[in-house]
Image 1 (spheres, rainbow, N blue to C red):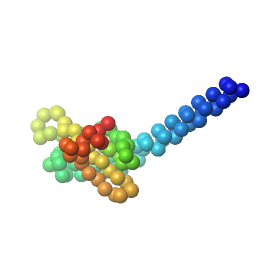
Image 2 (image 1 turned 90 degrees about the horizontal axis):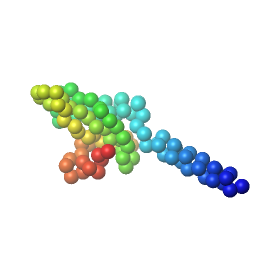
Image 3 (image 1 turned 60 degrees about the vertical axis):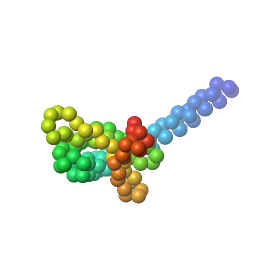
Image 4 (image 1 turned 45 degrees about the vertical axis):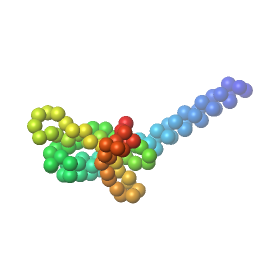
Length: 105
């Protein structure tokens, strides 16, 4: 009887872990749509129209966080900026120095 209880508990915990992971992941659709909007906004407002691309994405505090790489004026190096999207409120922001670590991966 004990092995059955332990097995049931393990299955319940694993189900919870898998369900939690499902809800906090960024889907390809969200990365394409929301991340694309972030990359465009960063390019226009913070990178003087230079090329940008999303290099990573995660969820934090119910928001979507996108790491955006922006080409520098010369050379092959990139600026790394974060863009935070609250899908429910329809807002987008770039964290400043004071709140950067709050959103970093």
